[in-house]
Amino acid sequence: MVDSQIISFGNFIYNEQDISPNQLGVTSRQINYWIDNKVTPFIQKQQSIDEGDNKGNKKRTKWIRLNLVQAVWVCIVKELFSLGISIGDLAELAEDIWNKPRKDKYADKVIKDYIKNNKDLSKEAKEILRGYLEDELLMEHYLRTVINPFTDLVKSAILREKLPHSLIYIPSTNEHEFLMHDSELMLKLGSTYLENTLINIPIIPILSKVLAIDIGNQKKDIFYLSEIEKQIRDIVVFKKPKSVEIAFDENHIKPIIVTDQHKTKEELARYILENKIKKGSKLLIDIRSQGNYKITLISK
Image 1 (spheres, helix red, strand yellow):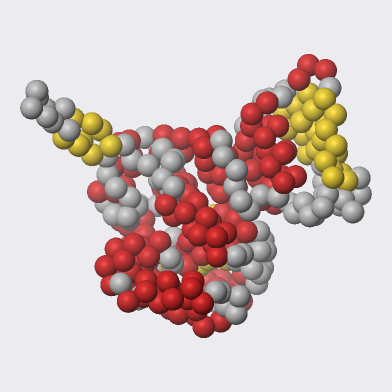
Image 2 (cartoon, one colour):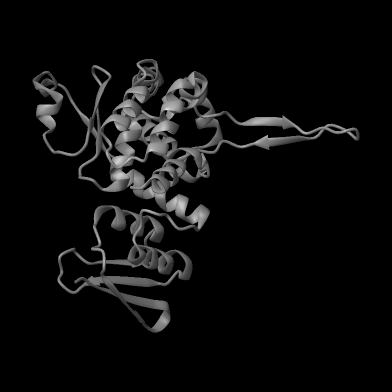
């Protein structure tokens, strides 16, 4: 990615706080309870802001809003909580995933390695990154809170580098591992985990749900989608057809049908994440009766 794309992607991941916990099936009471118990670090609690003037006091509620990686984490917490993991164990897990890398200055190492090893990085971009490293307030209160192995996992899943992407959690020891880029699970976890029960939480289904919510909230283009993918998304999200059949001339990807019985945006987000549409593919749109579409992708 070029510098502008890196900045755009970073904003999309970290800075755009558009997702409400309610959209994830989490009540205000639950999210506030998790924040109080340090299960969801770096998420601002609901606040009442005084906007008083000479005529009297006025208060405005600042609702909790999540960025993309925070939303994925909240979904993981919700799932683990439903499986009976205690609030204390979840807080300990959150400490390991969010606070330990901050204290270990994981972000500093990532930025230094990026400057050293990325040959395509412009001289201006390198100077900016070096400036970040010298700004202790920026590093401590922002970059070290958003750059860690978990956010790397989410970013990797979005960019579809390789599948699977999962959080592996061991309830008996409260340990975890991130599975990404390969399927060598037992080698990665080590033989000591063979005697313990593992919980595997795949990231792609969660990410599909969160991306679908974000697309619905913003109705905006996302730079990492190809033009073909944008057109498909726009048809499903904005035209709201009863049925969209997506077919391929070479059948190299299993066709799917998205209907009004599905959570259409979620189905589409999952589809785009799990499949790679070749650049240069042509899109043929057949408008059928009763608001149905047939989309045929012809690859070169």
